[in-house]
Image 1 (cartoon, rainbow, N blue to C red):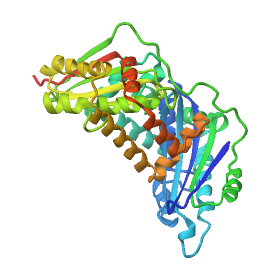
Image 2 (image 1 turned 90 degrees about the horizontal axis):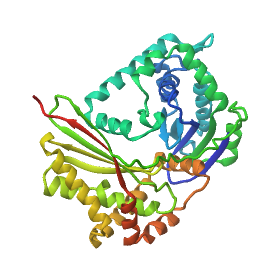
Image 3 (image 1 turned 30 degrees about the vertical axis):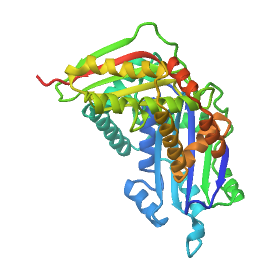
Image 4 (image 1 turned 135 degrees about the vertical axis):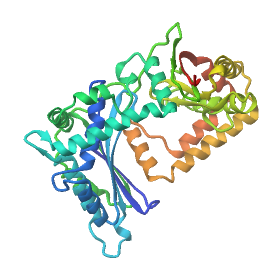
Length: 411
């Protein structure tokens, strides 16, 4: 276990995160999601969600949640506690100590009996997760994004939704989940991150009371790398819905904070990542081919995805105009205004995130995984150093790999 404390007077709240990190495993993705829900819902001392809520209310309306995130080749279960900083309370109660005690209770004393999670809690959370999985089919934008991911990636763990699959969920039992839980407690890399107007020595003392045993830290590569394929993967699917979805996946072997990363941020912003991007202006506004058109860049998995909502009859025209935007960038057809406005928008977005305790904590965790941090000044310097040729070079590394089309024509 390692502890990272970031003392700051910027916020009037204290945020504590206890992250359990394991290598991404296709067989454990669904278990990890269900485990997060079960641990969040109840513990031995707080056996119902009502009891959990009442305890948080006593702690001046504190917040608590457990999330699961896939980042490259790791899977992170993040237990997060938010509370008002005790320095701002009239009675100066030991709220920081109480926060650590609450997290310790939820992580180490779950509601379980005889090596199995409490059946009522387990079945309720399993049902809720299953219901969510089934509703994904109704969210066609998300459904298409997941379908693209499934045909694009060759690795099973990368193909899978970050919340798992219904087929895996059906097979999980209270005992199987509890066995997985004990394995996580014993083997996962543990990172404790505290941010707020706190005393570092006190945080160290409280963290030592968490009964994690010694274990190996994650030693593999954080980034998922997939070789480019010579032939584009294509899949068409028909469902009787009004709006079609045309999603495309591109390989972009430029990774987080590695050579070309900041140029890749600018490239994605100009291509489709920002409101005045080429995709938005040319596919949606000028050609009126799409209800929406945007791109996103995953720097931990080396790929760019494009999402569009269209009329099915416009599939080929939309595909051609998307291809033209990328070809234009490869040929250096980027205006000075596009270049300047994108850099400015990225700077503003970066600076605005500094005002968020959640984003600060997330960045601390990424720094731990990367074993290196970048200051605000360094980040700005790197972005400002990106030139026109750097962006063109990134564009030329971007290769179309997969196309998913959901035919939305209602018969």
